[in-house]
Image 1 (cartoon, rainbow, N blue to C red):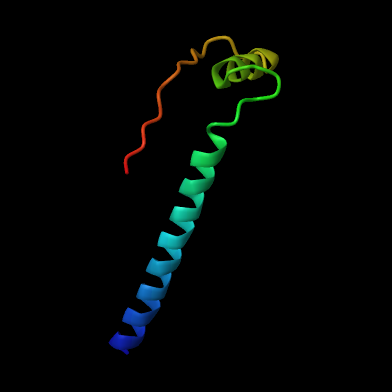
Image 2 (cartoon, one colour):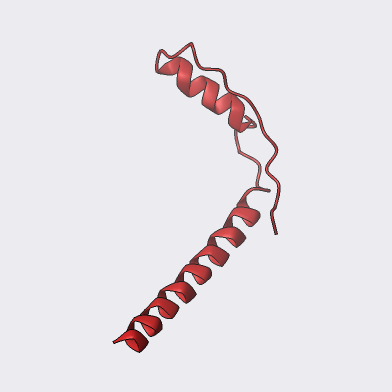
Length: 68
């Protein structure tokens, strides 16, 4: 029974590493694509908040750094 659990665990571990690598590559690819309207993410967030009637939230920017 324990060897079966180990095999299943290794399969799920492998799947999670694969999904993580795919998502990381997609994020890296699309984080360099500019928006067609020329707005920044901060500007879009502020616009969404204003349109929703939310004025007491401050939007800040933060640099994203690659950990690996």
